[in-house]
Length: 360
Image 1 (cartoon, rainbow, N blue to C red):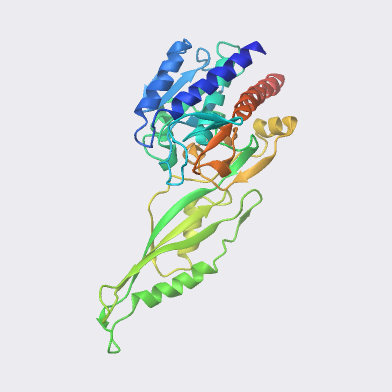
Image 2 (image 1 turned 180 degrees about the vertical axis):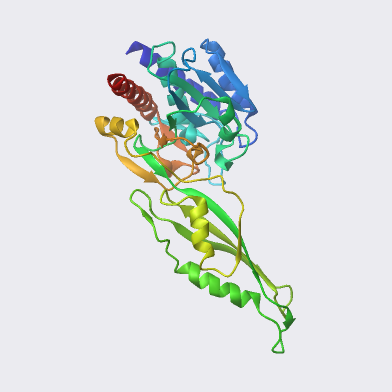
């Protein structure tokens, strides 16, 4: 108990230091160095690649499976609604205010504290802590940059603010650039083939479009038209209309599958910008689902993106804080949420270890 109290105090101080250190996506050098120094002070050996830091709780054992503890230390830009200094850690009424305090500073320092709790202990798995960069932009130099450096996990626990409920599925994202071709002509005469009108036919279909498969956790895959552009001058029939689709894909589809279904009903040429941000769902029968049942954790499907989208292994998302506070002005996390988050992560890992050992 005393050890956990000390871990809570260390975690809160680390979070205060992180808040005071600007770490916008792609500019996380200083927080990466801060976390490195924290590990040095705790006699934790670690590795760094770019602005990603990872460490093992004990000597790696290739005969054991691995579990990743992952959260991010980058933030979005502070919005104009802030009334407090976003880079000053302010404690008021049990709340710790500051940019990144909730998303995902609270989960990150809670995972680090839980990692330190298990440091040097014998576990039926390798425990690996990963503090990643560029999560807010799903950047190439974030978690994706270090996948090849790490052993494949049987489970990744991704720290995000979920009120310590467990997201066992997460929507993916696909942004599509669409082009509809016509034939130019003079607007005053019956000439040409209006690409704008052809695109409008597509857009009507998109407005009413429903994907065939529905996820029990995440519901329907959704497509929205968000940008359109056509024409260059008022008296010329446009020969090209371009529009953009935002597709939020559930675990019922791969991105490729969702794209195929859209192509069957639209005239436009569809070109995805990326096929990286896949949806995820914990496989049926995975041990973490039994752990969630044992602990009475609410399981749900998350509509928001995280590093789960870039982790091609079974993963869950869980952490202290509330997703509704993310990216809001005067962002905060309750201090007791951090304490409960650390205890919750420890209990989660202890239960997982116990159930796993009983199966061996």
